[in-house]
Image 1 (cartoon, rainbow, N blue to C red):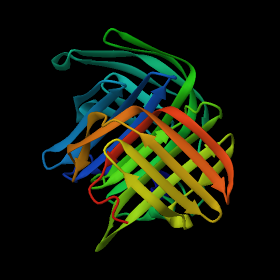
Image 2 (image 1 turned 120 degrees about the vertical axis):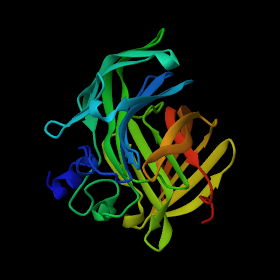
Image 3 (image 1 turned 90 degrees about the vertical axis):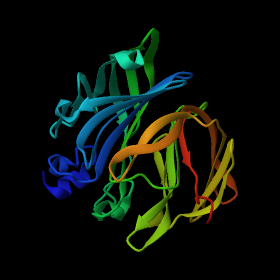
Image 4 (image 1 turned 45 degrees about the horizontal axis):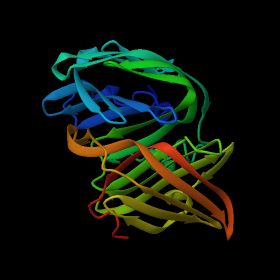
Length: 322
């Protein structure tokens, strides 16, 4: 696959060239689905370390999380159309079909969800995805891409004895790939606002860059069909970053626009993240956090609303050392 085509179509599997090598590498997709009070996310992916390549699917709901291992031979992918398969489960931009059973965890999940009306971020040659020109740099430890800021979801997932039914509800898709997650970061995403058809995601992370590191910011807010981006490469800056055990308050500024995002939160549920290709880093995610987003232009408030069922991960370390 042509390298520029992979960069432009970041949902595609980026790591085919590493599958038969002992390259420290990971690649994972994130499919999130929420109603007004329930949610389930699936994270299918692969990781490659000194012992070889492996596949996995992670699952997180409001109150449970699971990690299911697969042989790499059970991982299949298609470039056109985009689709990945792990075991008997498939994932694409049109929907997912789930069939997971792990007797060691007393886990059985099956069902399907269809996607429609996808809303994506604007792109161009300078910024083929949310990482902008950093998308072209080959030595980034972690690459991030937004595949769908919001889509309409319909279907049913049954997890053990619980059914989650989606009827014109909200979905979100993103992915990461590289060798390691950042040592410190906060990531948050939501699209279940009370009064507005809106979506947002942001991440602030410590980004290693050869001999130094920097605080990287990526953020998108979609209000109806209007897009606002706050990123390192478009000269947005972080005015405030306050993170406590159960509360965060973050403010970004770009030109006349000021964006504030704040929330009370719980620690979340354990997931696994990569360090040099090994899925040995414990992180904690909630998919049921309530977040308030306020956007001002100068002193004028142009958007203020609250979203429930937000995704949130905080790995602190030195994140607040601005």
